[in-house]
Length: 178
Ligand code: 5GP
Image 1 (cartoon, protein in one colour):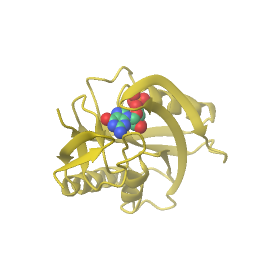
Image 2 (cartoon, protein in one colour):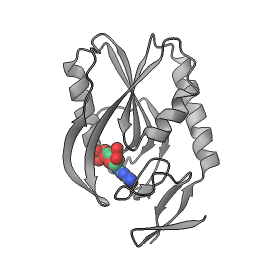
Image 3 (cartoon, helix red, strand yellow):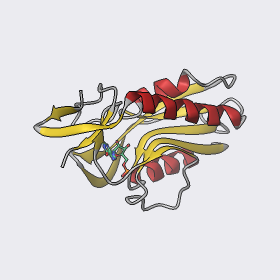
């Protein structure tokens, strides 16, 4: 499908699933090559669920673990600027080598919030892997270790990303059609 309609808005294919797959493989390879000891991947839900699954099945680092954090900062297609932590980390993660898996980094507010939460837990190291990055919207100084693809300030859906909770199941990434 070249276009899809979600809540009366039309979206067109932007990153086909073959390209997503190549990007994810390349990111997993980079992470495999850094030699992190006993990494704890933390996937940011809900948007990163497919990205996290596809990254994890390509990780070959011994003793790799995954956990999940759930935050929300979007209402419709515009950021609210507020981040609410919905589900946190309950296990002891002090001293762990963390790799955050984010679907998309836009303003960076969510990322900053996650990092401040993790730093309170005295983790050993934090690395960040983001499938998509919007450099023109980014307002933070935190450097992102692994970026799948930098994109313009378009609203995208599919491959885990939603438009008011629908569209997460789409295998390609779509952008709002003008
Ligand atoms: P930030 O806090 O960096 O502004 O936004 C991060 C979160 O906003 C992402 O994890 C994602 O849930 C949501 N988000 C940002 N840009 C988009 C977008 O283009 N499409 C969708 N579906 N969600 C987005």
